Amino acid sequence: MTGAVQALIYALTRVLAFLLAGLLLGLLLGHITAGLLLALGCGLGWQLVNLYGLDGWLRARNRRAPPDLSGLWGEVVTNVVRLHRRKRFHKQRMLTVFRELRHSTAAMPDGVVVLNDNYEILWFNRMATRLLNLRRKVDVGLRITNLVRDPRFVRYLEAGDFHTSLEVPQATRDGLSLSFQLVPYGKQQCLMLVRDVSRQVALESMRQDFVANASHELRSPLTVITGYLETLVLDPQMDPALLGPLDEMRRQSDRMNQIVRDLLELSRLDAVTDEADFNPVDVPGLLRTLCGDLAVRPNTATVQLQLQSDAGLLGTETELHSVFANLLDNAAKYTPADGRITVIWSADSDGDAQLCVADTGPGIAAEHLPRLTERFYRVDAGRARSAGGTGLGLAIVKHALEHHGARLLIESQEGVGSRFICHFPVRRVLPDSLEGSIDTTTPAVAAGT
Image (cartoon, helix red, strand yellow):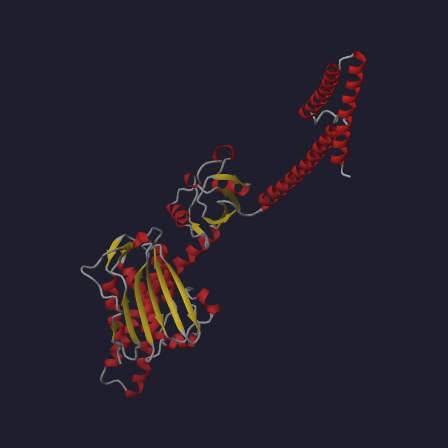
């Protein structure tokens, strides 16, 4: 038998005892109704006294011992005491966990800022106070964009793509370069990690300056060497036995000149911190020209151009030309003459646009895909050099696309081929850029032989 049932039986027994006492008192007085009413009134008074004692204890239970009550009132007091102890245990446990969390976040070398769905500050650790100059009593509740005013950080939040971090050079008044990355969690909240990357940014700047200066200094002597080699090759009195080595020297000097040009282009893209201009670019016309030039090359695979949209882009035409040309050149180098290169320009229902360059080349193993856009990275160094590549084309593509707020996706399967997809956001898309209608039935560009 449970305690609640026992308490109920005890309460009913007490009520019956009061009624029996009232009945006996009524028989003695000769008025049974009056006796019963008097007994019930005494029982009600007793319940009110117990209720008053319980209320007083609940109001000051931290300073008073629980009342010694019996029956249902005693059961209520026991349950309240049990709930109070459980609550106090969980509260102490939560305080312990919170203290450990504060100590662990205080020891972290990175700043931590908790934001709500409106990017308003809810909490931050000590390192975030130092890196972002936050003040606990003033900045809690403010939007983080009111404190970090860099346009790149605002665009990072608006894009909502938090898979990668954002580096902002000179992000604070103290000249610190910071890295930001948001990690969504819980119910529409996110954790913002802030890291001091001033040293890495300084080293990267030194590397970029070195590459730019070295490339610039190499340009002049290479031009002189190339000029003399061309003169020697065209000299009619040159010994025929030397023509072969001179041709090879000229090819290698041309390759070095191409490397220097690519390095200078990468240095220029690295030096640009603002977004590309919003100038209209006729993408279908540009692709027709590039595919036509590619198709007339000797030993080139069949080139198919599919214009599924007449949309243009808002950007810098020279950079977009470099992106498309590098992707087409890369596909031509690794696709056999009996293969096929398919170029697809399309726009989706959300207003975004994308260029897909697909080939039927040898494909790329999955472990190489994350590093393809690194400078000078080659899947097969021997084959790349024999094809005349510099190892910088995809790096230029990646930087130029980032300059336009776009991204590069690479899909490949060994023995099947590769797909390079440039995805442009809607703010960079210029719809109805061409006059008249466009044929969407997959026009083809004949390959050279």
